[in-house]
Length: 229
Image 1: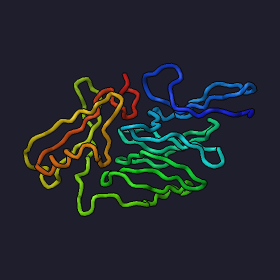
Image 2: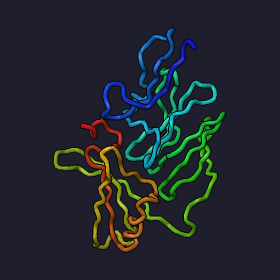
Image 3: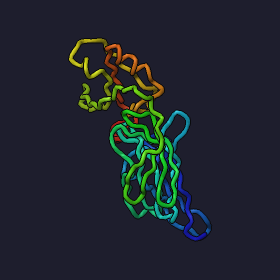
Image 4: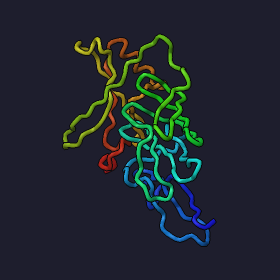
């Protein structure tokens, strides 16, 4: 139909750097340029996939708004923007330590899978009008208190600031002890602040008095354009 378009996640001119949310006009009567709906964020759009958080972008019931996931400082958040390209993306579910790995949009509510610093992931309902979050499941380990990742920044030798997370037993933080530097398998990846069911050895080591340092070095996908240089 006249005015129809495709919403896709990808790159306009190259396959390096951040993936974008693109509005591409289709049909013989459609004219105009491809619009990058996520350009103002300078963040990598996360469509989801094996071993990666995020979700396929989805339209609201009226077709006016698209919800999509982006990665910021290692965490994957939900943003919304106008599907016609006239608006600026705004956060729907964001914040340090929040990591979204699923999205389904209904008439007035979205359902997401949300991991937090003390949860490996729960089904959460998001009121699209108020932004209120309602946790619908309880899959957490009963009676087990997780060591929460502490956000850190470090200045390196050339003056650049790199980002990371620290895991340790707060009752032992003033005691000397061994340190493990764990390097992620990027560069197209990043450590985040949510509880992590894949790297449970971090919890075991912290319980034994270790400090675990998770650094997102140059080239890690944390959002800033300078990290791609």
